[in-house]
Image (cartoon, rainbow, N blue to C red; front, side):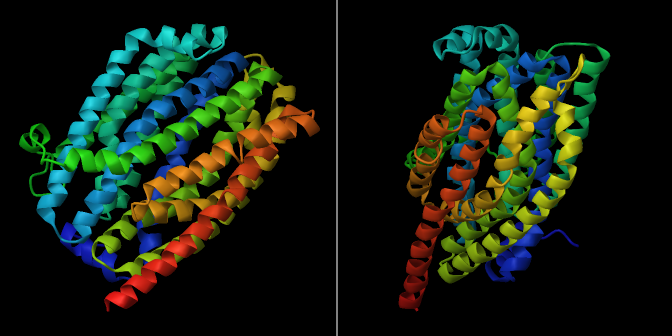
Length: 461
C-alpha cells in the first residue's frame, strides 16, 4: 500500500471507515506495544538467571524509572493533543510551532534528569529502598536514567509517525530494537557473565541506536513536524504555558500511577522481597496482552484529536466506539494465546543458575491467575481513557487514574490482607478488582461526554 502524505492522511483520518482506520493504524502500534513489553520481560528473564534478589531489584528499579519516564511521556502525550488538533484543523504553521515548543520543554526536563545521576544512592535511601536493592541496583538505575533521556527522542518520533498514520515504520523500528536488545543482553549476561547493570546498558545502547535513526527524520525540512532550532530557542509566547497546562495532569497521572505501583511493591515486600519479583513478573507477563490491546486504543487518541480539531465531533465519538470494540476483541485474542502459553512461559522466570525454583513459580502463577483477567477491564478502560485524552480532557483522566490507584487498588489491598492470608492471591485479586472496577466510571463519563459532543454538532448544524 502506498504511503500517504501528511495531507492525505489527514483527509483519511477525517473521512474513512472508523473500524478500518483503527485496525489499519492500530495493528502496527499493537505489535509495537507487544514488543515494547517484551523489553521488560527480557530484563526480567535475564535477571532471573542471576537470582531472585536480582529479579526483584530489576522490578523495583523499573517502577522508579517509570515515575521519571512518565514526566516525559506525560508532557509528550498532552502536547500531542494540541499538535494533533492543529494538524487536524490544517494549521501547519501552528503545528510546527507547537512541535518545537515540545522539544524545548523536553530538553529542559532531560537536563534535570541528568543532574540527578550523581545523587542516585541518596535518592534511593530517601525513599526507603531496601538496602539489598541499593547495593545491587545503583548503577542499574543510573543507566536507566540515561536511557530514559535518550528515549525521549524515540518517544517524539513515534508520536509524530503515529500522527501521520505511518505506524508500520514504528513496528519495524521496534522489531529492530528488540533484536538488538536481545543480542546485547544475551551477550552481557550469558556470555560475559555480567550483572544487572549490563541489562540497563543494553537498554541504553538499544535506545541510542533507535534515536540515531529517528533524528534525521525529525529534522526533515519537508515535514510539518520538522524540528527547527530557531523555533526551539525562541518559542511563541503562550505556547509553553499551554502545553504544560494540558500536559501537567497527564504527567501527574502517569507519575501517580507509577508511584502507586511503588507503594504496592512496598506492601508486597511485607511478604518478603521475592514477592516484589513475583508481582513484577506477573505484571510483565499479563502486560503482553494488555499492551497489545492498548495499541488499538492508543491509535484512536490521535484520530480523535484530529477530528475534534476539525469540528467533526460525531465522528470522534464513532472512533471511540470502534476503538472500544476492536480493543476488547484484541484483548480476548491475546488472553487466549497467553493462557495457552503461560505454563511454558512462567517457569522461565523462576529458573536461575541454581535451577527451577518451584516455590517462586507457584507464587507467580497464583498472582497471574487473577492479574491476567484484569486485562479485560483494562481494555474497556483504555479505550475510554484514550478517547478522553484525544479530547484534551486531561484533568478527568487524572481524576480517574487517582481513583484506580488510590481508591480501587491500594485501599483494596489493605482490606484483602485482612481476609486473605496468602499474599500472592491478595495481590492478584487486587489487580483484577482495580483494573475492572475502574472501567465503570471511565465508561460512564465517556458516554456523558459523547452525548454532549453529538448534541453540539447537531446544534452547530
